[in-house]
Image (tube, rainbow, N blue to C red):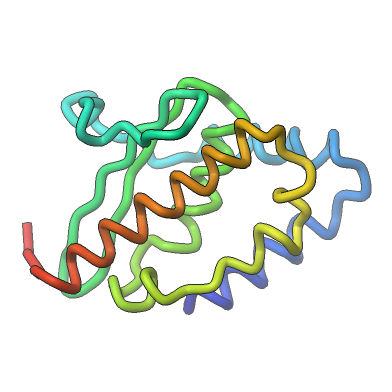
Length: 142
């Protein structure tokens, strides 16, 4: 699936909920499905700066595609990062870096998150895109 196809799928899933409490509950449920980062990768260099919660993100490049794992100590944040992983995982670094994440606005995340969570979301997106940029500059196969 392309990044936009995944975003459209997420928008459709969230459109089933009329109430934001239901959407928050869905985010919590999504967080339970998050591909957990290895304990060895819960290190300072993988910690996202700018998040109120602790969020760790690790990436690797395999066969020209990015594979991302993450974890957070906050349930809502974990759900948010899970959405980002769905959008960005198994995509090329170029596609990740150049993507327009319209789903954030479409599902209402930008207006329903607290300012600190919104800042954290921006920081997570920025960091993942920086990883993608680094892979385009110096590709590695780990």
